[in-house]
Amino acid sequence: MSCSLHDLAEYETYDTPSVLVASEEFASAAEAQGRSLGITPAVVYVPHPIQSRDDAEMVALADEYAGRVIGELVEDS
Image 1 (cartoon, rainbow, N blue to C red):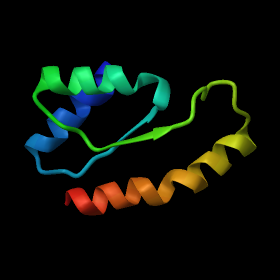
Image 2 (cartoon, helix red, strand yellow):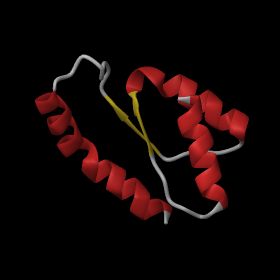
Image 3 (spheres, rainbow, N blue to C red):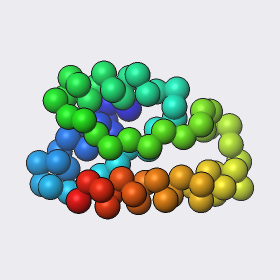
Image 4 (cartoon, rainbow, N blue to C red):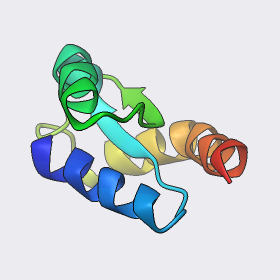
Protein backbone atom coordinates (compact mmCIF):
# COMPACT_ATOMS: atom_id res chain seq x y z
CA MET A 1 0.00 0.00 0.00
CA SER A 2 2.72 2.42 1.00
CA CYS A 3 4.63 2.13 -2.28
CA SER A 4 1.46 2.62 -4.31
CA LEU A 5 0.61 5.84 -2.49
CA HIS A 6 4.17 7.12 -2.78
CA ASP A 7 3.86 6.53 -6.52
CA LEU A 8 0.58 8.46 -6.62
CA ALA A 9 2.13 11.34 -4.71
CA GLU A 10 4.96 11.42 -7.25
CA TYR A 11 2.52 11.35 -10.17
CA GLU A 12 0.71 14.35 -8.71
CA THR A 13 3.90 16.38 -9.00
CA TYR A 14 3.74 15.77 -12.76
CA ASP A 15 -0.02 16.39 -12.99
CA THR A 16 -0.48 12.79 -14.09
CA PRO A 17 -3.94 11.46 -13.22
CA SER A 18 -3.76 8.24 -11.22
CA VAL A 19 -6.00 6.00 -9.18
CA LEU A 20 -5.18 3.55 -6.44
CA VAL A 21 -7.11 0.28 -6.69
CA ALA A 22 -7.04 -1.47 -3.34
CA SER A 23 -8.89 -4.09 -1.38
CA GLU A 24 -11.47 -2.54 0.94
CA GLU A 25 -9.63 -4.21 3.82
CA PHE A 26 -6.93 -1.56 3.41
CA ALA A 27 -9.14 1.54 3.32
CA SER A 28 -8.06 2.93 6.68
CA ALA A 29 -4.39 2.28 5.90
CA ALA A 30 -4.69 4.05 2.54
CA GLU A 31 -6.41 7.04 4.11
CA ALA A 32 -3.80 7.29 6.89
CA GLN A 33 -0.90 6.96 4.46
CA GLY A 34 -2.44 9.57 2.16
CA ARG A 35 -2.74 11.99 5.07
CA SER A 36 0.87 11.40 6.05
CA LEU A 37 1.95 12.14 2.48
CA GLY A 38 -0.26 15.22 2.31
CA ILE A 39 -2.42 13.89 -0.53
CA THR A 40 -6.01 12.88 -1.01
CA PRO A 41 -5.63 10.14 -3.60
CA ALA A 42 -8.35 8.93 -5.90
CA VAL A 43 -9.08 5.40 -4.69
CA VAL A 44 -11.36 2.64 -5.88
CA TYR A 45 -11.85 -0.08 -3.29
CA VAL A 46 -12.66 -3.61 -4.41
CA PRO A 47 -13.95 -6.50 -2.28
CA HIS A 48 -11.50 -8.39 -0.12
CA PRO A 49 -9.78 -10.87 -0.49
CA ILE A 50 -7.95 -10.63 -3.80
CA GLN A 51 -5.15 -13.18 -3.70
CA SER A 52 -7.45 -16.22 -3.50
CA ARG A 53 -9.37 -15.29 -6.67
CA ASP A 54 -8.84 -17.26 -9.85
CA ASP A 55 -8.36 -15.68 -13.28
CA ALA A 56 -12.05 -15.68 -14.17
CA GLU A 57 -12.94 -13.99 -10.89
CA MET A 58 -10.25 -11.34 -11.45
CA VAL A 59 -11.55 -10.63 -14.95
CA ALA A 60 -15.09 -10.29 -13.58
CA LEU A 61 -13.84 -7.96 -10.83
CA ALA A 62 -11.93 -5.85 -13.36
CA ASP A 63 -15.00 -5.64 -15.58
CA GLU A 64 -17.11 -4.56 -12.63
CA TYR A 65 -14.76 -1.82 -11.38
CA ALA A 66 -13.13 -0.55 -14.60
CA GLY A 67 -15.82 2.12 -15.06
CA ARG A 68 -15.15 3.51 -11.59
CA VAL A 69 -11.41 3.63 -12.21
CA ILE A 70 -11.91 5.41 -15.53
CA GLY A 71 -14.36 7.79 -13.88
CA GLU A 72 -11.77 8.72 -11.25
CA LEU A 73 -9.14 9.27 -13.92
CA VAL A 74 -11.41 11.50 -15.98
CA GLU A 75 -12.62 13.41 -12.91
CA ASP A 76 -9.04 13.91 -11.73
CA SER A 77 -7.70 15.23 -15.03
